[in-house]
Length: 420
Length: 123
Image 1 (spheres, each protein chain N blue to C red):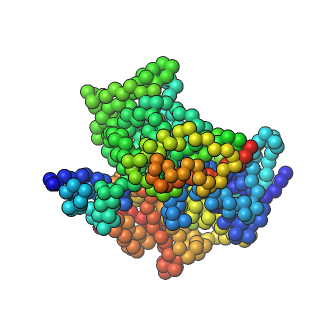
Image 2 (cartoon, rainbow over the protein chains, first blue to last red):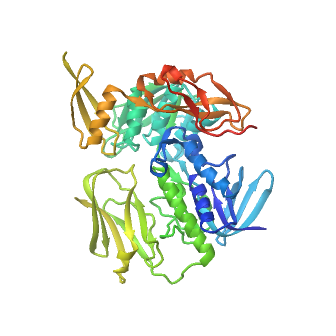
Image 3 (cartoon, one colour):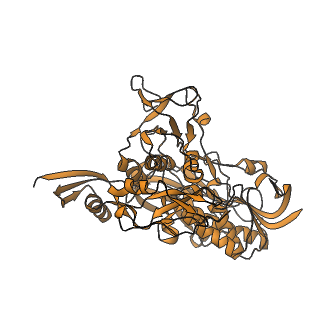
């Protein structure tokens, strides 16, 4: 069996940044396993610009952003396998994978970084009534067909969900000659960025109907029409508000779910809120030496943050490989309450963590003129005003190791939304 | 000349201020509704000279992928978006393609080139 110090599952933005960082922190024996035919992951189909403002101070397209990190991996001579699917990861870090050249094979790793990304919520998970004809795609599937394979999924389009991929595809399909008739969003607010509402919908006079959902899909072989209706505050359709749109395509942009089947087989504990692994300050899961970063951990809105998080995971995995793990370190839980849905990480070790630690989270609703408050036990430590917070935008709190050192008896950290 | 108003949503931050711009012909008379200077600047640009980076794809021959994504090298007038898109419709490039390769020069008479935004190696 081949052995590596570090096996990274996934060659997208998270896996690439983690690999480069691990190498820079002294690990030479690294293998990246990627199931697609090239490195770069989902960025390869995200051809719109706006990536990398934080990291490179310029607006890149997805493939350009990916290429910067691909170059880092190539420059460092890091080994990778393409067209290779990981089938299983065991708790003792044996990775089983297969491809057409090697068949089924196993590699033994000292540490594993999970970087598998996420996938889209499907029609089945949405429980949309109606027939099951051709012409219903997730927005990301349509994005791959148009941008990478060169196929147009349809000519007259209705989009359910106002997530960013749906908005981006509304513009993309329009530019390729399709007619996007409406974007329906179940919630009373959009899940997408303001910039995308303006530049992908308003620029092309595509209507966005908030508090609306699909109640019927017509057509036996191909989608022929979609009916949407307004929903009440209980999110149930209001009779009499139905509107029928003839179309041949329905795109679904209704949320992303971290892809953790492999994590589960390794015994990694998942957070039911994020559907991603529960991790500590070093982004390590409950299984020693298995780390997680990027969208497999929790769904990000900015790839810049994925790269930062993955670099940290790479560095931490390198430390684990070189120095092992301090088993008796004190663990403090971070409690998300009052509007804070979750935090990543969930646990910190005040004696082991870096000098500063970025804790990322999402809020559960739109909050205006509120503040993010951090408590060490019952004592208020920081309160930061935010003019607006929304579920679609990730928030953060930075914890300071020195400050934590002043509280040796600390039992819990609480992060919550309060009035400003 | 009589005054007209335009309603905009600011894209500067998640706040998404509703901004009202009062115009006299092509002159901006006032900008209201914004909460910060970025909103004012955005609104003035948006009503006088709105521009966008356009991204799209063109076909590739002899590459490992059938498509390569492209972008305008800088922003072009918003009104030229569709003309730019149709100028790219039947363009075919040959692999290898390098990031920055000019795919269409001076697209839609804007003086801006459309460049490749991905490396595609030859098959």
